[in-house]
Amino acid sequence: MAKRAGRKTPEVVFRDGKPTAVIIDIKEYQEMLERLEDVEDLKALEKIRKRAMKFRTLEEFLEEYNPGV
Image 1: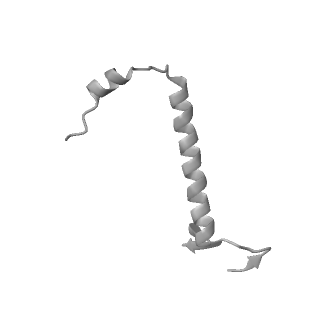
Image 2: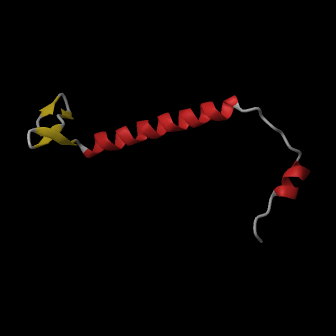
Image 3: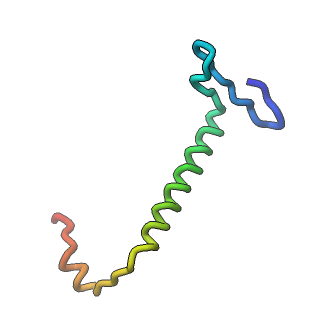
């Protein structure tokens, strides 16, 4: 892979004249996964914030909580 300004250029793999895969630097791949996880977390947070919040007393929580002991 050719280096350009400290970054490696992705390599496209062709099969029968059509692009079928891309080879990228492992560090770039890991960064992409982290960004994807961040986006998923933000979507989940938005969904949670749209729901009405329900508060319970400690006693109510303890009545429902069963640690399996």
